[in-house]
Picture 1 (cartoon, rainbow, N blue to C red):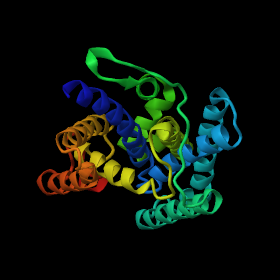
Picture 2 (tube, helix red, strand yellow; picture 1 turned 180 degrees about the horizontal axis):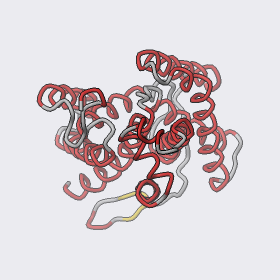
Picture 3 (cartoon, one colour; picture 1 turned 45 degrees about the horizontal axis):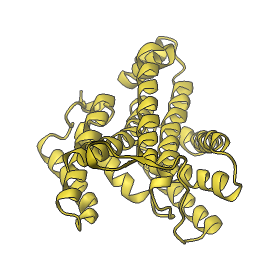
Length: 289
């Protein structure tokens, strides 16, 4: 059981971290609370279904196509709907919810309300220490972990990463230093949506696809970023791992209690908001510093 909890906890934690880090990135760099973030995760899953199943393209073609298509949609959404109202946080919240609902209805119209499935990219399994792990799980864990490493290197070792972190720390100072804050926000949106798209593409063979599949991950992402600290990349990663291992442990100890994972996330979110509103590693918003 401990081995199962370790493997599935790491896999779920890595996927949750992808979503939470993307959510925190765009909030930190542009102060956009993007409630449509997990809708891009859903679009990634349906994109790989469309390219890989409907069009029967090779995974080596379908996966990049799916990610690029979702990122392009995200950039268009940013420039058309979010950039003009970026300074109005309430309006951004309303628009992102509306965008998510539009995506949901579009998926419902195009693909129908039936459950859909995506074939595994790689079949088979291994049996270390007496329990089975599918190659698809290992592939998902490997790809997601690699993407997290790439994002860390991007943020810490590149000029764009320095600009994103500077903008997240103080946009006005970053602007005075000659940084194009608007372009940084757009680039951050593309990275954020890309992370959600990769997560959606890689977990599609492990999930059942349906038009409302973005809602449950949204609750989990909100719980993670509140636990770790809104805008904190380190907090998002650690919060994702904590929540994933709690969730997996509950499921293994109570096999009929898988439906409790959203309730657990909400309970953690409420406790953190009461006890430590800034989260484990976060800071108060600019006006509260």
